Length: 373
Image (cartoon, rainbow, N blue to C red; front, side):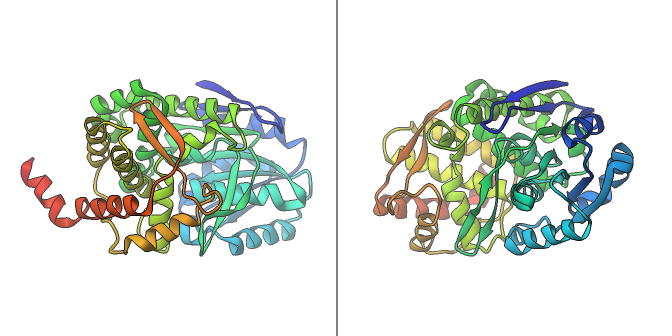
């Protein structure tokens, strides 16, 4: 098992990644909990798979389990309020320890609850999806969506420990597993060209969840996320690179009411759009754009591009947290392994890119691709 340390203004913490990591939960809870009661936040479907194991590991320390809907549409302030009221009814005080067992939605909601309840209680993340293990559970970003946009209400509140155990991915449905692979591809593009090349060569092994290949890409992704957030916890500079593909992706999620795409799928399409925009701005080679798009397409099918006017997508992007003084700012690739931040683009160029993406993702275009194969 690998221990990867993350620096934080509120105290450094470790990500334990590797098979068997879940077995460290009792030790972590004793060390972090300071004798307070333990409260688990999970979702019904995750808890169905892992309840017996988590309850056995926590034993009598666990006071109660709070189950929330882990769909993106439930990632809102009502869910936060409901979880906080459940904690009150269960007798949680300032010494309580919250253990989030689930994917990105569970982690984001539980993190915001931990940041807010009694003005802050201790938190351990036990991520059960690829997206959560390599990305959302690390770095302290917590929050929920508003109808106007994604993650607009939240706080920076890092966990005291993250247990990223690949064994917990065994029960993931194929679509959700694939959704997390897009975030791993992101790490390859933004700062780890050898990881990108490994994926080009070994993607099928990763998709088959072969132990060695999967462990390799998860560990490299966690190491990169830890490196970035340790240098820039509050997203004042370097951390912006983690948003590659997300400005477009969040807009796709927003205009479809968070009901069409899994988060990783939207990011995958967003990376294709961002790469196309980078070519338009003559900062990324067409051959590298093709490599990025080809690797993303190889991961598997995703819902097609929405039949939404480009102007509506641009308006949704304007609500993105990365907008400054009404100006959209993008993270765009310069080469595989390096990106630039804070790059602006004219609306006319954005409209052209969005139209090209819609055409490329249409069923007719997909059919032509399959025919060529």
